[in-house]
Amino acid sequence: MTTSDQRLVIIPSITDSSKTRSLPAAHKATDVRLGRIVRLLMGYATVVVSGTKIAEEMGTTRSEVWRLIQQLRGLGVDVAGHPATGYQLRSVPDLLLPEMLAGALKGTVFGMQSGANSGKQIHHYYKIGSTNSEAMHAASEGAPEGSVFLAEEQLAGRGRGAHSWHSARSSGIYCSVILRPAMPPSDALIFSLAAGLAVRAAVEEIAPQLAVDLKWPNDLLLGGKKFCGILTEMNAEATRVRHLVVGVGINVNQVKFAAELREIATSLRIETGTEWSRVELCAALLKSLDREYRSLVHDVGARDAILRRFEESSSSVRGRKVTIEVNTDENGGLAGVTEGLDERGFLRVRTAEGLQTVVSGTVRLIGNL
Image 1 (tube, rainbow, N blue to C red):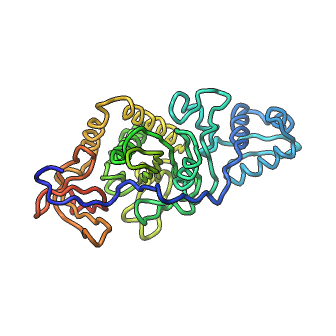
Image 2: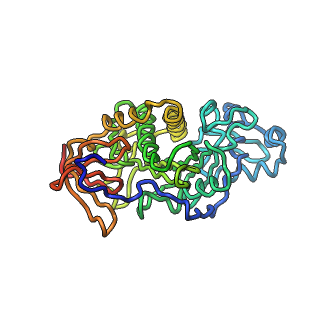
Image 3: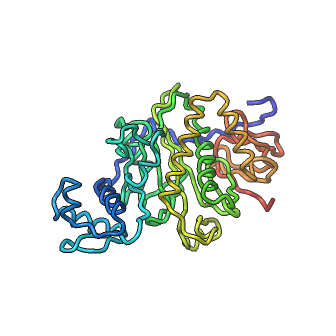
């Protein structure tokens, strides 16, 4: 705390789950063979593939192939044909299946180095309560660093605090990753800021015309409306992090929102007028997260660079009138003008009482720039 600081609002900005156990998901992971069938059919895009050939290549039976094809159709994959004539993929599915992503993630912390094991640490769910809850549970059970949890639909998607995250089926990216950095818990906020930069880079890689705005600590905006939220949770001892889960929810192809969200939420499709490939964006996101993480782990100057880049990418962390809801009766709220981030990544706000350091809270922007 600097000598000009008047008060430190202390609310953990990173959820510490050391004393609570995340419940396992109520839904099973998607059968990994579905992705193998999709890849096989993509390899024979112009011809009909017999059920016998698929069964032989997968080491299963024709009846099991039929059952798996039915599951793919239930996921919205357009597969023509039936057991008597064979099968053909009418269009490439935009499902976040491990087989669809593994190739793009080779060499990253999220991709297996061995081709035989490629994709085995990418876990996909058709429906799940929360990818973050499942990742936290898996991490506590010893899941390796770099494990990825993806869902087509979340039934209990979570944001910061008591907020929920609306997770329309196969319209957004609902992704959580496990990291095990050698660092004290007090440094964890930097990972939320780095994740925001990673999302921004991934979106602008595909659509450089979009002006993505970062809102401290973990929201991303387009035209003043939120299209992405980040939830970072950790399990830690007093001096070290056991594991960290970074969850990212991105509104990708939603074309409308519930009435209570229309004025504050948007999607990439709404902003651009075009449909996006979730597979392409998810691969870009994970590669960007990998770059940020490796830099943090290996580059002593990465922390300062992240703080500088976050400030440069945000219209609201410096010189913006705000109110802060800190979600606690003890501290109440405060209002003032933002004065950038401190060396830990916390927000500074100049108020009538002096310079305040906000560790966590909901930032409300006042007026337009």
